[in-house]
Image (cartoon, rainbow, N blue to C red; front, top):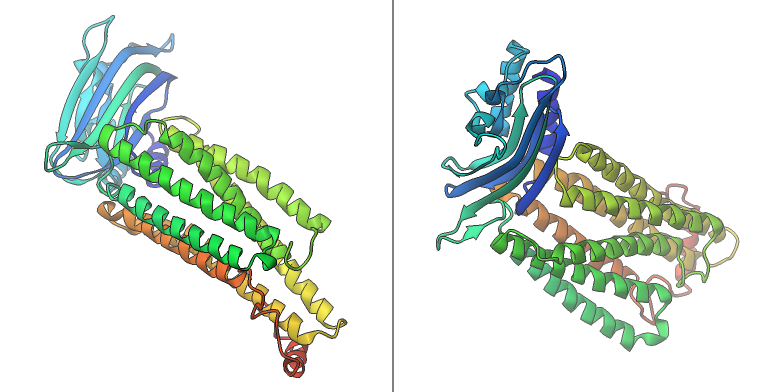
Amino acid sequence: MTKTTVILFFFLSILSSATAEIKTLTIKSDSRPMILFEKFGFSHTGHVTISVSSVAVSSSSNAPNPSPSLLGFFLLSEESLLQVLLETQQNSHFCVLNSRYIQHLFTFSELSPPPLSRLNRSYPVSSPNEYSLFFSNCAPETRVSMDVITEIYNLDRDGSKDYLSAGQTQLPSLYTVFSVLYLFFLAYWVYVCYTNRRCVHRIHLLMSGLLLFKALNLICAAEDKHYVKVTGTPHGWDVLFYIFQFIRVVLLFTVIVLIGTGWSFLKPFLQEREKKVLMIVIPLQVLANIASVVIGETGPFIKDWATWNQVFLLVDIICCCAIIFPIVWSIRSLRETSKTDGKAARNLAKLTLFRQFYIVVIGYLYFTRIVVFALRTIAAYKYQWVSNAAEETASLAFYLIIFYMFRPVEKNEYFILEEEDEEAAELALRDEDFEL
């Protein structure tokens, strides 16, 4: 096994989040030297059950028949992976199945004889840690086909199986709490819109829809994780989760872009360049959600899994950059308008509002993309739920701030100003330091 291969799978194991569920996988004519199946955080009552059937091993015409002991399954922690890398550096022909740093499960030499070639075994995990489940093929020029069923879980105190990783078992409760908070938020927002219905614009209706689909998305996430935790399968809740997630993300980026342009509450139309931003962001979000489904519903065992991760990351970065432009355009347009229309105080208020909106959006994107990823990377496997809690808390704070800033009220503090503010506003607008 080459050093490059081990390094590649080291980064794959970092990229992949801890998963669960009872999974049925099919491998066909695969020649990869290592296949990462799952990553899971075990408690002291952890178990791994692997069922392998329809196994077929084929070699090239010039290669001898491989030894069954060169193909097998094992568990590996991230700490031990570094040790395996050192062993590979010392010997380029080293087979990871012979490493003393892995938790060996079985090799193909233990399979039932052909034509059945199957095995079904359960293994206890006595040392609590986060492990990656690998299949290793140390026989060069050898292709493997097989059907694999994996069942990975921890046992609760009452003896029931918990199919969620040790760091994710709190997620159903976490998502339930936030879904309730968003439902209360939605009810209050509807009340505010009703009591100030003369000031309600179309953007406020879109914001209501955003809250609704955010709450539905969290409800489905909670049910999805609950059924996976108890039964090992999502019972269809994952389909609803992805549907509401797609609608929610598209609405979120659309609302940010439309608020950034001042649509409906400052002007009734979109300029051509602003329409182009929406025409770029929405299709890209469709692609991002397709990548999200592939990443979530398959796993690192498929050959293009790393590519789909890169697609999702790239598209997300492009969308995050694209939604900033309308805010910057609005700020520049307001600065130019303030020099000619004689409404300095009103323009200064609008500039202040959009500048604050710009800062809030940048802070939200930075926190949810960089800080949350850092938390997910550095947190101990038992506390992976903390990154989810931080992300949902930041999202709720972002929604609260934005909805407060652009709430429908008759006397908006940003737009209703006294005449005596004009002189001070003119001085402020002349100040060239009033920039982002």
